[in-house]
Image 1 (cartoon, rainbow, N blue to C red):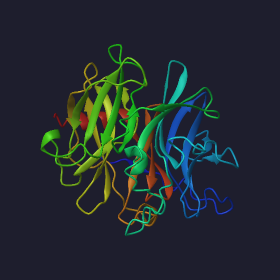
Image 2 (tube, rainbow, N blue to C red):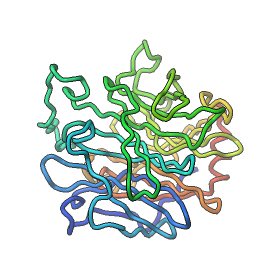
Image 3 (cartoon, helix red, strand yellow):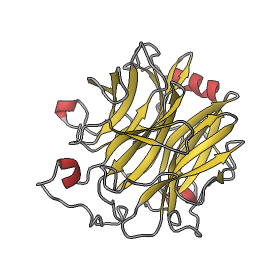
Length: 335
């Protein structure tokens, strides 16, 4: 079973009239609240530093989005640990507030898509803490009451790791918060996975996390390195989790699995084939040259699943499915 891509994709493209988003818009966080879809999207202009900010767009139907601001809704800090860029927001609502995990770097990323790596802003300075000296990608947490103003709550990952694709479960499970993560350095015999994989951890506080458990590793030909994609969705058959997977040719695909409702450390089912792969020109012809569909948000409304994804690091698309049918499909493949 495949997600059905919207015929009007891409639903958001770079805006040539605004310098801060005239190169790329991608990898959005989306949530449905108070009768409207709210989208925080990653945006970048044509500056050599490749400064990445967040824009805001809204929609009534989940397909046709209108930019809500002429300026970024959130930008890198002036002198903090996320001064280089902010990327890939994932949104959940819990305790009546929005919490957004996001990736960031202390220094500008530069034109990372060029080869060899053009990140002239990486200091390679061992006298600095590792996160700064190597310009590692870390993950932090934002809090918001209205998705218009934000409070930076700080880092939620180990500062010595490149740790992105960090995603909260909505609410608590057995009294604890749960978090998916994908540390790049956790690969090899010590970690029981040849390639970077998906891990899960739990905590009593959103800023303090405990022991990490290996949740899922790449197991199919279409995905060696894998990572979480969208916030898990609760269904009577389990936690529905969408993940991204990278094949031997660096092409990105989308997979799906189900986790046990009471103990999400257990994968109970996992589809053996992708539910989405790059096909259209806008999924191949962007900043990233290998073909990318990279989901970062999902919404269920009226039984329909909306999946929002970045396309080749340049555009935003949406794909849909009947949620129950998709869960039933995945549940056939017991893990």
